[in-house]
Length: 250
Image (tube, rainbow, N blue to C red; front, side):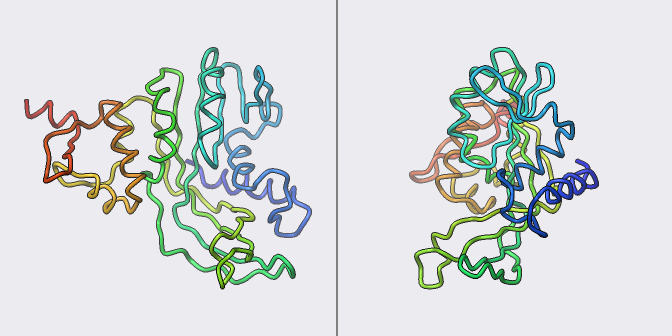
């Protein structure tokens, strides 16, 4: 993690825009473009054709794919890429975020306001769950980057204040807050917040401040990887604990 180089990459990308602030002026969304420039400054290794796909970054047998949205498309792409390459999937998540609204008719932008939510690495569970058929794989690494960023949205939603259902314009990253490299099953335990022993799905929901669906995806993924194990019930709910803790008790 080198925020000095990260800010340099941001300046280079924003400088390529056609407007003074660079917001929404690039064919590629800014967060994706900045991460690509930060992870690989040399252009000849960016956007490299590989088979029927185009890799964000490719050097020799190493490929980096930056995924800022759903992992659905990776399910088709990764199996082919992993046949002959080591692949790192970079997944940026919002850590601290400010939000500004843009009037789509006038272009006027509101003053940025700080979002009350602080992101955690557990926010990755819902998307990581989609890749569970590929885990573990010796050539696959997941690189989670917690990013402080500025988000801009168009004031064009369906609610009375036009905010619900609005379209996101762009996200401008400001710094890297934390990074998590997931190479082997045990690394996935890094995504868990402090939890009671044993814990329930609802405990994970509360501690990580994520939805029930996301918490359930996390538990299912960690069970499939052998990171956690079921250890009884509490009422109608299953209890879980880290697998290594159960082994230590044995």
